[in-house]
Length: 314
Image 1 (cartoon, one colour):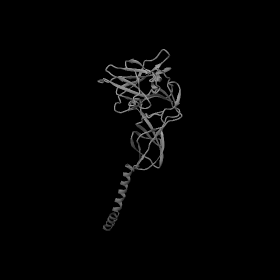
Image 2 (cartoon, helix red, strand yellow):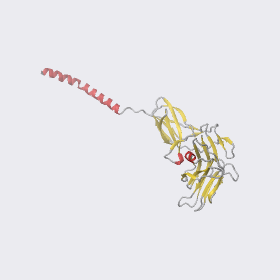
Image 3 (cartoon, one colour):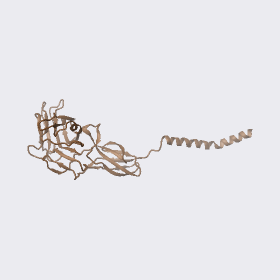
Image 4 (tube, helix red, strand yellow):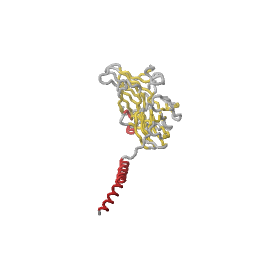
């Protein structure tokens, strides 16, 4: 009996290290199941978007003629939507460095994004700009610099509301409808964004006001996607909106769709106004674009500069 017990004790003693290693292996495997190995991502860095002219897109000018799309430096895109193999990676403000869980090679798609109607909580891919598509070759743990390129889709239509380059007394294409300060043409190189001129509303004293509308009405196609985009630089708050002309003699009241805060100190800004909701409800035969400039509380003077006002649609 004692000999049997001694033998069993001897066997147990010999196999104890093996049993310990066995249980350690089970524990380690359990840890791997709970905390699986994470793939080291490849990092992509983007400073800014680059834009090119699409020769298939023409600009319908104020006088009814057409010309090749006017190149502009004003396509400011500060945010991008990123996809890898059609899976969303995220939304990033530029400049940005972001991780991509890539292996081998795959498709990297980057969409230029905008703040719709100036709302930072409404970031969306601008529907008229193409995605930048490239092949990303994984380089785990390293940073790849990339400059995405975009342009207008070929079936986009661009109609000039006013680019302030026509010259003459009607160059602004705006008339005063209410108030005492009409929009003027500004040709000061220190004020102009690009080209030779921009529009200016200058409020010189408390009580000054300006509500201006386009002198020439324009049509807007229904059933598509439509934005009005423009550049601005302003030390005063202002509002933009539309008036629907139901017939030659009947028009709706001007409806201001968005208010815009002063941009003083931050240079020229780009604004993208989505108007599908309005034209779906107020289906006019033609429309007028409205701008209303006011002084903020405590202000005694200020000015609004505006340029490149155009209707963009599919």
